[in-house]
Image (cartoon, rainbow, N blue to C red; front, top):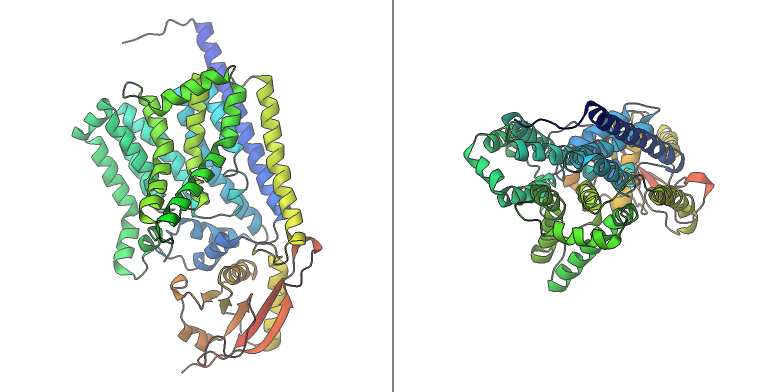
Length: 511
């Protein structure tokens, strides 16, 4: 058994350093969360598209949906119930998921590279678009971040210790991630490669640990598997869909996704360079870390945790035509932060360098000012306002006044028109009306498996559209009357000739 040769004073000093690092990281997390709840509360006019989808679906508390697992849809519904602070709850939930995931990544950075690595990983994660602007739109990429960070931390604990409880925690983390987004399997694929590279880890296949992880994950995901087997919804089909054709599309989408990945790590690279005394040393470490041999298990783990998910997506785009979206990098940013933090520490990086503090302050200001500028100017410079640029609560008030004029029954159903903008409008109304309402996207019935045209005929419905309506827009079975065109109320007093909405009434007529 090895004993420490450090003196009591040295050990106490080490504990003090850890406490200081924890306090600094904790304060940074707290300030970050409060700032990115306050900013969108002041500058966002309505919930964004993916949040609108959650507001539409979350009210039905289904186990499976046609597009994604249900975790973030349920969270959106929980936020809706906290009126009048529902918007603040949406932003708080997004930040809790993102920062919670970063906490797992920071823990891993601390274990493998000490307090300096933890502080650098925290800075790299917090000063990233994926932990600042992205969590405003509470979606499946944000939902999986918490489980991504947990998987990073528990995976290392399991691989390096071999303990049964560590493997069980790893399986539970992955199983939980599958309730948020199947993209957690991108990380599992990368970690699986790392596991096979290191001989000591690979030999654990002969022990119970890895198989306990499989059982734990299967138990967590079992209700969803059962529901998939007994319902028509098939989110797996959505998850592996392809949207491009032809070799040129495959190549261009792969290159675009690669460019997005380079953009995602750009702030982290800058922090690493400024933290290191010699950029040449950092470049050498980067080369060695990318080619980490089995004798360097830390290097193998953090490298494949970062490049593994990227390669899975990029190769899927190249060979199978998957239209890789830049926002799929959202959870991968946590892996990137750990990787660059480890690289910086190995190159002598020190978070106490004065010029690094200036760099971090400038990056923070850039994100805050950049976001504020975009939000303040966007409604004023766009001829056609994007879906997020109208005042959701005021639009709900307009709809309530319209409904009182045309019907003496409660508003129970909304039919949307206008593809994504129409869906966002319907979801915003579901979020802001103050009572549950069925939202049926007439053009995409698979997105509304909880209602049907027959139910709409019986209950009557509001038609909310971002394209012009006519009496026969929904066909002869659902005639529309009382059509009115209204201005979608834009935030901050901006105006636009094209910021319109059309409202209509489908009278109840049960057969």
